[in-house]
Structure formats: C-alpha cells, structure tokens
Image (tube, rainbow, N blue to C red):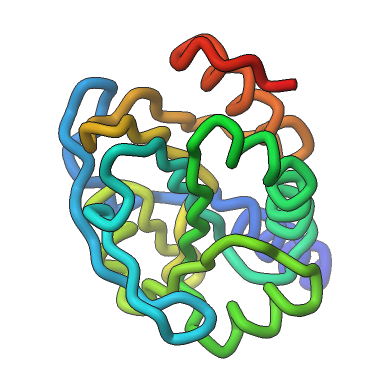
Length: 179
C-alpha cells in the first residue's frame, strides 16, 4: 500500500498538481512579468530580448519525465512552423542548467530551456507549486504578444496536443497559417 501511495504522489508531483503558491492571476491583456534567466548553455535570456516577436513561454515540472519530454518533443517537431510564425519557444522549469543541458542534448531540443532554480519567475507567473516539500512549476503556458502582453494563458495543458493548440491559436491571432 505504501508503494501505491508513493507512486501516486510522484505522479501528481510530476504532473504539476498540488497546492500552488500563486501570484495574483495573470490574464490576457496583462503585461507579462519580466525575467532574466540562464539557458542550458549558460546564456542569459530576458523577455525584452524577444520584443517585436511572439513568445510561447511554457513552464513544466521536471526535465526528462514522460509528460515533459512529450511536450518538449512536440515543440521540437513543430519548430519550423513556430519560426515561420515569428514565435520563440522558451521552456522554464526549476531544474538547473546542467539538467537542462542533458535534457536538451538527449532529445535534440532546438530552443532555450531556462533555469529558474529558486522559482522567482515561476512565482511571478503564478505557476510555482510545492508538493511533498519539493518546489516545481505547474505545466502551464503563456503566449506573449510582440508588445509584451499576455495574449493567452493555457492552464490545462495536454502535452500530446499543446503544440498544435498553440499553432492554431497563433494562426488565428497573427493571420499566418500554421501549415
């Protein structure tokens, strides 16, 4: 029985469920909180770096776990569609740079994975969660427009279909076909 409870707890942890430490709800039209975070190669990225283009800022619980891998690989497989739509994919978790580097190299991820080990940025976006004493980011995405405003907040993310969902919404918002 103890093993079943432990397995369920880990499943909920990695899925991003649990009581969240939430910032006041960020909604469409709000200015996106700024950030400055290192990627898997130690290069710094800020939201300001991506002005004049779209940003899909996706938060995920943990590198190299099933749902997170599926989501990242879906973005990878659609990267040329996102680029054609002038959209930068940025992944963020509370993992460190070394973990991100290993994850990105293992799956050939062609976009930055930003390290937020203290959870400051996850907190600013209201996605930081504590489960079993461990802080993680909930699986949520913020689509940020070229003016730095939240165009859409995705709270319920299905890793299998999220990339396609983002592309469809971007096509509607930009008038650029996803295909």
